[in-house]
Structure formats: structure tokens, C-alpha cells
Amino acid sequence: MNRLKRYTLAGILFVSVFGTLSHFLYQLSGNSFLVGLFAPVGESTWEHIKLLFFPMLFYSLWMSVRLRKEEPGVIPALAAGNLAGCVLIPTIFYTYSGVLGFHLLSLDIITFLVSVLAAFALALRLTPNGKIRKYEPVLVAVIALIAVLFFVFTYGPPEIGLFAEPGI
Image 1 (cartoon, rainbow, N blue to C red):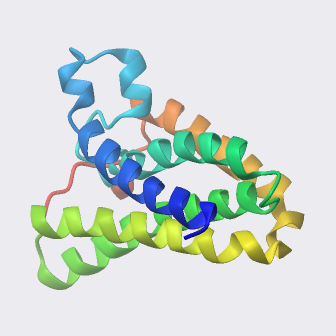
Image 2: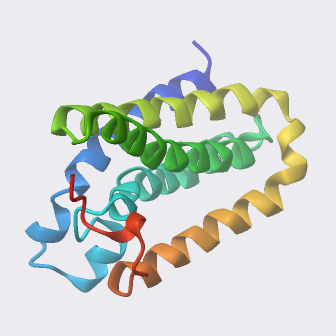
């Protein structure tokens, strides 16, 4: 197995474990303001996207440092994967909960894990191709913008459904 695949598998494990643990981090920190910027502070769908976004961002930074010379497309591929995973979480959640009329913890966990797998699968597929490199500045800028939006909307969310506590 090559280094890219090993790092990808390690990333899936890291994000799955750290993302799951970060669900409880804010409460365990005594509601620390700083921890709340990176970990969910509530049960809204927006806050739950943090479970994937920040662990994958941190792992991507680490992985990029180690692989960018041999895999020049790794940075934009990981950014695209992160964005795809973040889009999948609300897409799957609202689809299944809309069809069922309620949500289940087991399906929420599966949604998270499927999104992590899809994020890294996309990154793995895009990295060796290299064609995504031309989009690197845009993808990195979008990742930075989303990080800023997480910081801003954590403590000042807009009053729309994505930011509301699930009521179904």
C-alpha cells in the first residue's frame, strides 16, 4: 500500500474518532469559548458539520506537509473532500429525517461516518490526477471562509433552519 493510501486510511480513522469525541468536547471543557469555536456548542446541523470540518482540516494540514512533494495535488484534493463531506452531512440528515419525519442517533452517526468516508474517498481519487491543482487557491479560500463562518456563527447564528436545534 502506498503512502497516500496509508495516510488516507489513517485520516479516516483520525477524523472518525476525533470528530466523535469532539461532540462532547465543549461540555467537557466547561463551555470554553475557544473550544466552542472548533467543537459543537449545540445540536444544530451547522454545529454538527464541525465534527468533520475541523478534524479533517487539521489532519489535512498534517498530511499535506508530509505528501505535498510527492503528491502535488493533495492540498486541493483534501480541501475538495472536506467541502464534499460538509455538504453531505446536512444533505443526508435532511433527506432521511424528512422522509422518516424524525431523526435517529444511529442514523446521525452513520451520516457522519459516511460523510467522512466520502470526503477521504474523493480526496484519494483527486490527488493523483493533479488536474484539481488549478483550483487550489479557490478551494483553500473557501475552506478559510468556512472556518471564519464557523467562528462567527457559533455564537451569533442566523435564524434559519440550518442553525436551529432539530425539532423533528
